[in-house]
Amino acid sequence: MGEVRESLENREKSSIAREVFVNSSARIVQTMSHMLSSRVLGTALGIAAWLTVALLTWKSTPVDASQDSTRQARASWWDRTSPDARGPSTSRHYRIRSDLPAEVTQRYAAHMDTMYDEYMRRLDSLRLRTPPALDVMMFATRQDYLDTLRTQFGIDGSGSGGMFFVCPRGAALAFFAEGVPDQRVLHVMQHEGFHQAAHAYFGSDLPPWLNEGLAEFFGEAILLDKSVILGQSRPQVVTAVGEAAKSGNHIPFLDLLAMTHDSWNQNVASGKAELQYNQSWSMVHFLVYGDDARYQKHFERLLHLLNGGALPLNAFEQAFGLTNAADVRIFEEAWARFALSMQPSPFATALERGEFLAEGIRFLHAKDIRPATLADLKSALQSDKFTYEVGSHGYKRVLSADDDTLFELPGIVADPNEKKPLKKKKMAEGFNLVPVDLKKLSKKQRALEEAAPSPPAIVTVGLKPSEFKIVWERTADSAIAWRIDLP
Image 1 (cartoon, rainbow, N blue to C red):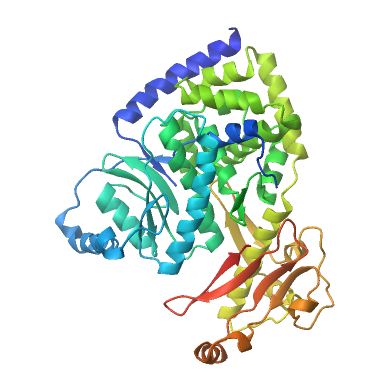
Image 2 (tube, one colour):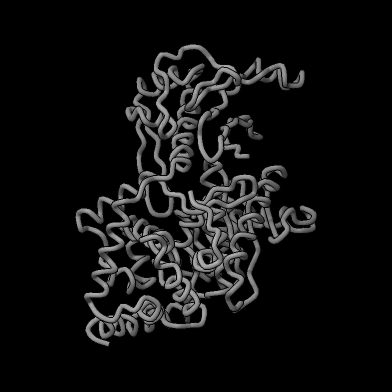
């Protein structure tokens, strides 16, 4: 097949040798605006990757006596979340253990059910290899998450916010909510939920770039009116991939295609994984949307070959007809043009900016500063030089209040002269702060608000395809937390 086939085959043999070793040691896997309408696109996108960000080492060493008190604390979560203790599952598809408030568990379960229906809709043309493992563990605290994973499954979850794992002691999706913005929790559920669903169709036969690229593709999806909108793109990722493509500092295609799980995870452990995640996500977008969607049928072919057990590199070569170095170069150049032309999705950009504003309000609230308008909020945050870090599996970026665009909806510039709190009927296009309406509260709620006022809601006006609202809730320990309300 020429120099490319020889290179691919050599890499494949090396990958297989390592894979056999990993499998024999019981792999554990860690971690999280276009509607896809055509049947071909649905099949191509819906056939997906399994597992998650990085392989963990399974530690089966028994816990010694000195850890007995910790073990008891871990076991208590397991006991109090047993099906007998919690009653019937709140999900149509999943078996759920949770110590989150009942209403939060119900909301997360409904979200996961909607995503599961989407996964299955796009996987239905494939052969089911094994029954899906649909256990989910929702933790209120990070410590219970770490303790339970370790004692019940022998997994070290340090450094993770959630994961789908498979090990000799079981398989499940697990995540915690403590200190994590609601929107980030949803991302983890969507990313890991996709791995969980796809595991039944692919096992471990997806190469890392496709595994994580597809998981992030679904992780960035938005649910509106119980419809899943895929194809979302955040500003930081689009910019980072575009800059890498322009400078030639992206990962060469042959290197990315041949990257093994070991190599991928070594980069994760060393803190060098950002580009491989971002570029893999971009590759999936390219194969779905690039060059007027000309690669969709090839992408579908690739996924069917992998589902049938073909070796990843051979499957890619067969699906796309890359038989020599010139073919690879042409393909790589086409992706680079696509990466340079990509624009962030307005809705995903607005969600990220809303997250920044909500965290800014919470920061000021802790200092007893109560901005009444967007102009007040902007002035206070810039005065304090407020920054906030956003991130996902593949990137971390620091957002600074010095960036005026963070206070604006994409394409809508805020009025810098607006000084008065706005009522719903008089709100201008852009972000608006809306105080709590005491008249709509019960006597008890009103008294609580008067004693300890909640921050104002953040409401959008003029955003497409839908408006959203950021609302505040009081937690069991009297702290405040925000979440995004979508229609």
